[in-house]
Image 1 (cartoon, one colour):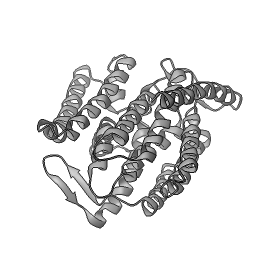
Image 2 (cartoon, helix red, strand yellow):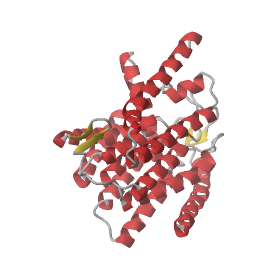
Image 3 (tube, one colour):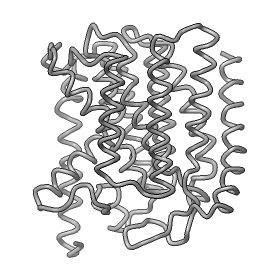
Length: 344
C-alpha cells in the first residue's frame, strides 16, 4: 500500500510539472482556446494540457504490460487509445469536422471490439441478467463512441472534467481491486494512472484555470472509461452496470441534452451551452458549486455500487428508478427557472 501511494504521488508530481512545461510550449505555439459567446471563460487560455494525462497513462500501461508480460488486451488498448488522443490533438490544433471525428471513432470502436470483445450480457437492476447476443456488437460500438464524446461534451468548466476524472478513475480502482465480482489488474492500472495524472493536471485547471484539458484528453478519457468494462469478464453484465453508474451524470446530461435539442429541431452536434451544468451557470450558480455537485453525483454512484455488490435490496430500485427520476426532476426545475426568467 505504501509503495502504491508513493507511485501515485510520483505520477501526480510529474503531471504537475509536466503540465506546467506543456503550458509554456502551448503559449509559444499559440495554441489557445479563444473565448466566444458560448464560452465559460473570458480570456484566451492554452488548451491541450491533458496531453500529459494521455502520455502518463500510456506509459504506465506500457510498463505494466512489460513487467507482467500481459499483452493480450494492451496490444489493442494502447494503439487505439493513442489514436483517439491523436485525433483529439488534431482537433485541438486545427479543428476536424464532426463527421470525420465520428467516422474515425467508429472505426476505432470496431477495431476495439474485434480485439477486446463486445457486451454479450447486460445487468439491469430489478430485472436481472439479459443476454443480448450479437445485438451487443452495435451496442458496444455506440457505447464506445458515445462515452468518448460524452466526456468531451462535458468538459466545459474549469476543474469540471479533471475532477470528475479523478473520482471516476478512483471508483474503477476500487471496483477493479476490491469488489467481489470484477477483479482486473489492467483496469486497475489504467484507472490508477488516470486518477494520479488527472489530479496533477487539476492543479493547473482548478478555477481560474491556467490551462484547458482539450479534446486530446477529454476524448481519450471518455474512450478509457468506455473500454474499462470490456477488460473485465464477459460472462455477465455487471461491468456495463459499473461503467454506466460511474459515468451516470455525464451520460444522462449528454443524452437528455441531445434528446431535447433533437425535439426542438436544433443541431445536436453543433457547439452550444444547453447542457444542464452549463444552464446552471447561466442561471447564476457559482461554477465551483456546479463542480462539487457533479463530484457528489460520482461519489453517490460509487456508494450505490457498494450497496449493489453487498446485495442491499433497496439499491437496485435506487439505481434503475431513483437516479433517472432525480435527474429528470433537476432538469424540470432548471427549465422552470429559465422559463420564469425568460432565459433562452
